Length: 486
Image (cartoon, rainbow, N blue to C red; front, side, top):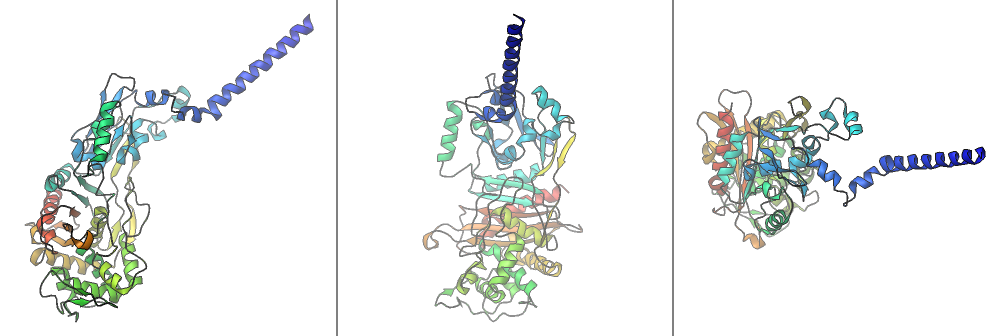
């Protein structure tokens, strides 16, 4: 009898061991698979059981959490949702997250290990700390000025602090209210369907994700390349450029919208936006020189994050001379995001050094204790310091007595460049109006801001000066807000 009891005990011990092995398998090796199973609602319930951390602008939250009383308890809410949507993105119980909501999701949702001194304790207890906060670099006054300036027109504004790369304003228009996507059910699904079907594409972040032909604003890159390469040593010397200019290797004549461009100097070509002169200068710099100059400014660079990903701006690396001429004035296949063109203006204003743009100043715990800081990072030199100084002078002339007079601000030094980007079949589409600029208070050591504005549906003449009418006043309002904050 004792022998049978002993065998029974052995068998029970074996069953207990098998049970422990199976528990370990489920809890350790297969826990991730079970957690990711769509049928498992526990993860979603836990995620929305507590309020989400906030995204801050000027130290104040522009997001919140609303108790829905449903199984997925807390839904995201937004203050001035359309104004800040290009910054915050959305946090939806149905469709996930985007932009800062996605990039800083671990902090905001309370799952980042940096939110606790003892993260292992929360793992063992299957709990989590309160969601942390993400403080952005955006300035509310500048954001409002950009949003009001666009006034619902299709377009975008990006503003940077040249010395640090902080993104001070990021606006895309038309916009949308992210709160309509926060919950579940037919209401959220209907809003998602309507937003994606809208031909105006309100959910597209035009400042970061849309690329446009930059038109004459790209002439700043070409002029800097010419000075760095020694192709132009005297910006006031005549260039012996005919008007119109025959594109190399073709019978096609490149005209000017401006007058007085024949034999104009490079300084005059920037001031009055002469296509012919800048196209010829681009050809003289050569393909390799132009490609390298564009790369230094950030073109053809993959993987830029702010922390959301940014579309790649393009300058072709294999072109004929006639294509190079057109590319050098922002036409042909040259494309850029508004953020990229703000980076061009910022590099000029910052003495040639290009700071990497970033949008999150710091992340903190719920009580304000720091988790991480957004650090300044250099992307290298876009141009020599002497070239940057000369380019600053040329851009100031554009505003003081050129095509960009509408950007002038009393009591400040302002440099700018207008642009018109032709598009559509046979350039039949309404031109995109561009303006890039920077501003420095008189007597200040550093520039306060660099801005890029593009207006897609601008009512403007088909000339380079259209950027002065449609885009420059918006840039001026944003620069004024930046200077007022100093």
